[in-house]
Length: 143
Image (tube, rainbow, N blue to C red; front, side):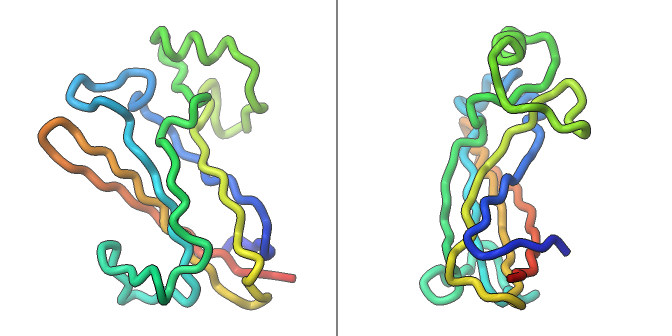
């Protein structure tokens, strides 16, 4: 389990896999992401059933899937243009790509010993369909 402190900044990183640099004509954009943060998450929690008003803490941080910098080094015009820009240093695991990122600040109200769960949701709706993709991450809050 990853460890973090209250008020820390966390960068959630993901690959664009062509959803930015090779956008499908059936999708007008690469969509939006949202991060929900929950204290004391349980296996009974359901994505569409979050009671945000009572369980969520420091939550609902929306962002575009395309952070404006990320690219897959695939030779497309968008990738070439972005590759030529000044950007953050790549991490070794990114290879020649620059992964997308969603930066969030953890709530100040978190206490040592808390388990804070981040739910990352990608809303990727097409012309005639709706798509949701998710992942989650538990953080142990330390001093």
